[in-house]
Structures are given as C-alpha cells and as structure tokens.
Amino acid sequence: MLRQPVYINSIASISALGMTSAEIWSNYLHENSLFQKLDATKKEYWVSKLSDAATSFLNTIISSDSKYKHLDKSVVMAILVARKCFENSNISNQNVGINFGSSRGATTLFEKYHTDFINEGLVSTFTSPATTLGNISSWVSHDLQTVGPEISHSITCSTGLHALLNGIAWLQSGMSNQFLVGASEAPLTPFTLNQMTALKVYSNEDTALSNRCLDFQKTSNTMVLGEAAACLSLSLSSENAIAKITGIGFATEILSSSTSISTEAECFQKSMKMAIGSYAVDDIDAIVMHAPGTIQGDKTEFEAIKKVFGNQLPLLTSNKWKVGHTFATSGLLSIELALLMLQNQHFIETPFYKNQNTTKKLRTVLVNAVGFGGNAVSVLIEL
Image (tube, rainbow, N blue to C red; front, side, top):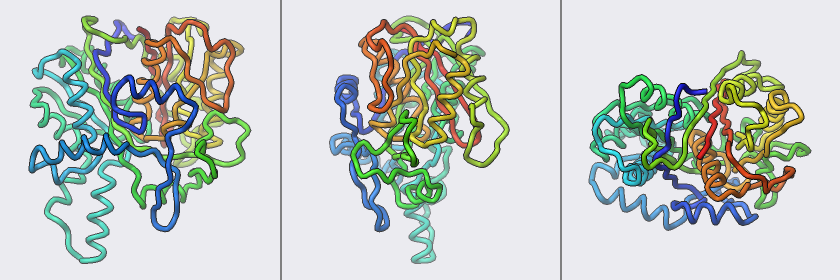
C-alpha cells in the first residue's frame, strides 16, 4: 500500500468506446463488441477503430499547427487526451510532470517511411524525429506549454500503468506537484497486425465477439487489436479528486520464453499482494484483469488470482472483449472502466465468465496489466 493516497483529478481517453464519459459508459452497457473488419495485406482482421467523429477531432489538431502535420497518429492521439485531461484537472501548467508511453510507438509513420525507403531508396527528413519514441511526451508538453519533467518509455503492454507508477514516485518524492500520465497506441497497421499473426495469438473467430477473454474453455487464441490513448492527472491533493489510488504493486519474473509468463503468473501474484497490502482479500470487490484473450494469458492470470484470493474470488472482468487489446493503453482503459463502475455502482461483465453477486456494492477495484517480459503492475482504486 502507499504511504498516502494519490488522487486522480481527471481522466480522458479516446478509443472505439468514444471520447466522453457518457458515451464510453453507454458503450459498456450494451452487450455488443466494438469490432469491425480491417483489410491489411490481403487478410482481414477484427479490430477496434476510432469513430469517424474521433478521427475528425484528430484532424482538427493536425490542421491547427503546421508542425503537427508530420506527427504520427499515436502522438496526435496523446495530445488530444492530454488536452482534455489537463483542462478538466484544474491544475496550473507549472511544475507538471508528463509521462506518456507506447508499446509500439509511431507505427503508422515508421511503416510508411520504411516502405518509402524500400521502394525509392530515399528517407524523408522527418523520419528520425517523427518516429523516435521520445517525441510523445515532448509534443504533449509543447502543446500544453508545461514546465516540468518529460518521460517517454516503453514497457510493452504494462506501459500505461508503469507511467502511473512513475508519476506516483515523482509526486511522493516532492519533485513535482502534478503529473499527467498516459499512453497512446495506434497499432492497426499491416506490419504490426502481421506480427501478432506470426505469434499465432490473433483471433480467427468468425464473429464480432472475436476476443473471448475470460473464456477458459476456448481452444485457440483470440487476441484482437485496438487503437486508443488515455491520460490521467495525478496529485497528492484530494481537492476536486474523482478517485484515489490506495495501493500499487509491481513485479517481474524470470522468463521461460520471450513472450510468456509462468503457469501461475508469479509476477501477478507478487504485484497483487503488494497493491493489496494490509487489506484483507475479501476487501477487494472486483478485479479488471489484463486478460488479452489468449489461452495462456487469460489462464495464468486467473491461476494467480486463485493463488492470492483462494475461495474468496472478487468479481472478475476485462474490457478486451469489447475494445480489444490496445497494448500500452490497455491498463489505463482498465483504470477508466474501474472508475466508471465505482461511480455508477454497476459491474460490467464479460460475455464469457459469469460472476456471483454482481449487484454488490463496489468499494475497491484492483486493476492488472502485464506485457512481454513478465512485467506486471497492479493498482488499487477507490472513490
């Protein structure tokens, strides 16, 4: 547990779920996924894409400044959610830390520039600055005109929650007064989609419910990719706070391969125990699981939860069945789902795992994320 709570002052996101809390919550309440078919190099993939309305907002940002036309989609998405989060946070732009991460980075531009190089043997002037991972936080800071540290990083699929860990560490050290933490991912590009196919984890389900996360009887992997960005404003002040973080946990484990974690996800066991701290296991009402929709990914996390909680399992859910796996952003979208469930006192189930007593009062929600390398993070949220 933390020495003192860290408060969430605002949150903003953009994904297939929408851009406003009302729209996002409305999309969580219906039983349909938000997937659609995308053709990439002669193969169709189920994906979750931004809406046309959301895309038009991104185009507005691009056209607002001539320098922005050379930015990757992931960076523009980060600017958009950071603006919204900053505006709603009631904080100044002085001594504001920024930590935005991405698992894949500037996928759209990187693939474009590399294709241009293969075809023409030439490299654009903007290739290096536009595809370096460090430009995400730098451009967010430039756009907001903030004064404070800027951090960009990549820790695969737990990147967003690692940004949150970094923000908490800076706040508790006294080196920053406020921190914007976020992640952005625009992975719906041919090479990135084909990478997931090469790993044999992408869904081949012939149905819109093609990500079967928390279906422990599935016989094939069902990962589906989505694009999304999210941003949280953190501080040590409870004034105007919408929720508080009362526990954080993190752990890694020795790898058996470049992609897998142990059969009982020891990293998750350690991160959840650290986040729960002195709470009793029956004090945890729900867990938003990482659960990417792969056989091993879902099962190992479930085994870790059973190891920690025994017969007193909390309510279990994940949003990957609806919005797909958004890589770095996935953990922060799970934080958003946890907040919405707490605020509305309504638990959102997956179609594939049925919980008992889903109408009970929600007081605490644990959020998990992990990525290649067994780098698990767990975060405990309360109102």
